[in-house]
Image (cartoon, rainbow, N blue to C red):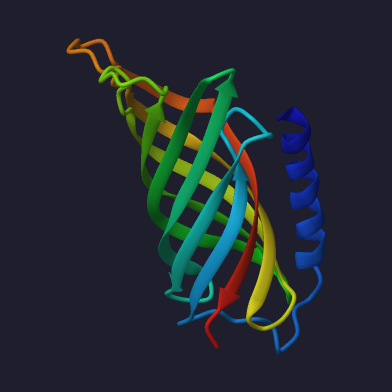
Length: 198
């Protein structure tokens, strides 16, 4: 993950170089538009496992948007005749703010609230698998470059500023909840393709 974190720093520097170029009169303006995004994001702890992300935002102005996103990740394992699977579903709502912008490239920051659910199946007919639920405050940075007036490509980097997980193991105990602040283990990187209504 360190390689990608360093790469993100380099990408931000490159974006700022583009943004430093004076914008022309026909610079992209997304005020009043709705954006639909599809992307891939690494899981919190692995670059091998990727989530499918769908986002929708409404741009209140050229500098601010409100919206939400849905992330789904399904993984399966098998060993001999035994098989198991895990499905993670995350939903978040938040605000995006443009920190700096040029003619076709902009740097944004975002934050909000999120909820996540993990469903596991170990292949056995038991009732002790549990279904952990987490709540968090995600924050992140994104670099977006417009290839046309309505389509952009971007990279993003995020983490959970705060997270509480109700780690239900299926047993009736009271030791399941865990709380973390500024959890670097939740760092992820992603790619996104976005379409804007015209």
